[in-house]
Image (cartoon, rainbow, N blue to C red; front, top):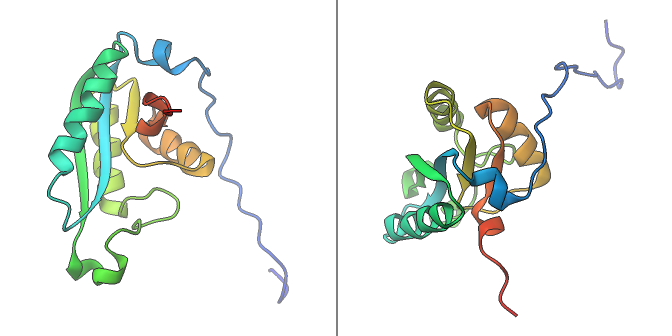
Length: 144
């Protein structure tokens, strides 16, 4: 029994380690899943995913699937449309599970998010999806 005021420590087991390679070589010859979270009012999400797909192909990757999560007004109001569903995964639990099953079934080598990801989100998503997860921000060099 845990005493009042004490913190419980949860152990989830070891986190699988994936080799860290430069992004260009990480995508070369690899099957890639594209993932994006978009506000419900964003009508350009298809074009944005097309641009990301082109960047993946330029790095030698093969886009095998696209997954879109749209946050509409009904899921939290207009003030929250641009916010993630989850701080851990960006996506809703259902969509995160759907993408994870698709990545594992297709034996995807890398999942590329259109959205920026924190290091913690990358770790959580990598474990959930069963493949390394990167952000599309990493594919586009910063302009001077």
